[in-house]
Image (cartoon, rainbow over all chains, first blue to last red; front, side):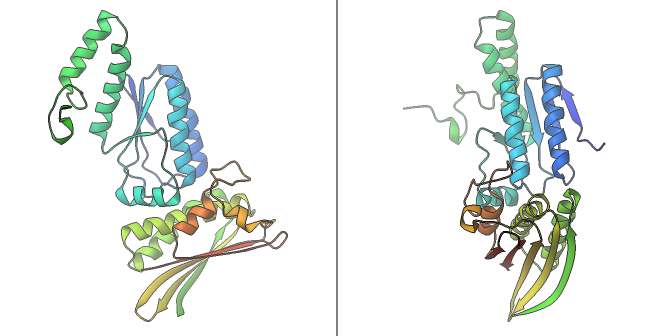
Length: 157
Length: 134
């Protein structure tokens, strides 16, 4: 049976949709991803839809479902690479993908996932987790709230 | 206004929905629609083709290239001989569904089109026609 491949990258799962999906393929992906999160204990899912030429209500629902199921299984989902024409059409169609995190590209999506995992682990008192968090913070200063850099980094008055 | 070209394709099974998307994309491209307009047409067609298969039990799509003076357009006529829609106003309401979907198919397709017509009655099948002008 035709399937969309799911790649494991450290604590994350990476899915790149590169075909014009018929509905059953979308359902299979949803099921495969859910069981893969559970089997691997993945902390995040990166869904790259940059090759998708349309997102209709069915595919939109699949994306929302994946994000919701992943959340229940303690994994974050980030959807990356939506084409501008797809975004315009999606909103006009009436879909806003509530509860789905998005990022412009794979790089920013990975940063977002690392940040989410770091925050979740940093909330504990485990020294090991803190060390990992510190290491990740040094590697990726994107999204760190304490670095006033760029137009969005203006410190509060 | 005149129809300068027409083609009918089957919309019977789920995989036909993908063929519909590809066919509409080809027509919209050859008629010179912008990328955003192409995307809107293909998305609307995808919603309506799925309705034809899932609710109408299969049917057909007729594509028509339109010419009105200098204007160019694309009309899509979806037709099935399924059970029909008893309450048209309700069927066009955002979020209303009888099939477990999001209830955005018909209403969304209408928002993505310049012209929209829904003709259906119980036992009489369903005909949905949309058009978009360049």
